[in-house]
Length: 367
Ligand code: NDP
Image 1 (cartoon, helix red, strand yellow):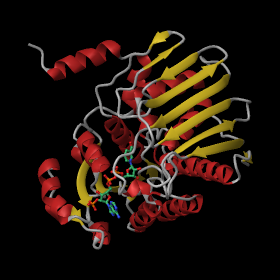
Image 2 (tube, rainbow, N blue to C red):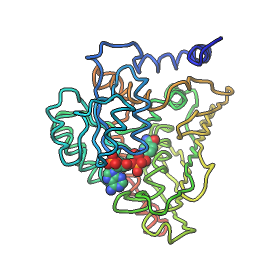
Image 3 (cartoon, rainbow, N blue to C red):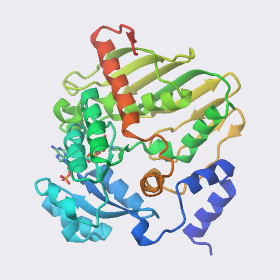
Image 4 (cartoon, helix red, strand yellow):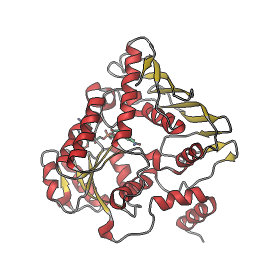
């Protein structure tokens, strides 16, 4: 009888095509010596940190070796679940002690959005490489300071743009780059979900910075940019709110358009008000790509003008991401553009969207 592992190997072998073999090679799947692994500490042990930690169990180039938490009870659980040495588990107060820990090369910030800036700056000061979750910050100014701090400290700064490492998304980008889609004419990108607990930090402006736009709308901004390979030159946006009590502090639903130098237009939307809202549709003069779902944990599905897409879905996105980032940091491999600068570009667009909403949908020009 075949094991699940054999089955997955067989499925991935039969579905891997040349481009995904290249993706796999770029993410460096050969087992390196242990000393050649990027040793990572996660900062803020919430639900996303747990997902990243689980995904890292399957990494070859990245290894979880530490953690930082404000909840002492999590230390035992994380030591047990992820094989961490308890001496490598820190609090927010003694975070700086991590500086001299030779078991930790990089920290991965998975805290609420408004805390990213402080912890990226503190990590850079310690001389550790930094991976920071999206949105990178809650303002353009913060993002610029984070990039400058990492540059000054001589450490790398990446943003947790996992889709940049995901095979279906990589194929979309490859098709655009090689001209298979022809001139890109239109992008339709939307992503949202029904937000639950009214007391969660995501609905508090001081911790989240914004609502659906900062949380998941950012995937659509980023996708429109990797689908066109261009930066928008204008934006117009509108917000609607069906529950002004729950969404008193942050945005609930936003629709926006972005115009690109080539003339391509992106029509985008995001929400915290309903489910089943996740798609990326890219139309060029010679063909199209449709990914749906396009941004969630997957499996991502898609079709193009050539037919159904079939790519390797055997790995968690965060496994691709962490091996890819480790390969970039350790070996100078491709960073798939998941950099601090990429995060800053999205933050500029987020600010322009809020600016347009505040001006009743006025078209905002971006320089
Ligand atoms: P959670 O609420 O599940 O976890 C956040 C953790 O941060 C908490 O568990 C806590 O960990 C720590 N924390 C410290 N101070 C606070 C505070 N004042 N309020 C709340 N938590 C605090 O959030 P997520 O894991 O869902 O999100 C974390 C980050 O990851 C966000 O920036 C989010 O945008 C991003 N994210 C990215 C995803 C992706 O696919 N790339 C998906 C989901 C989230 P402790 O108890 O250890 O101190």
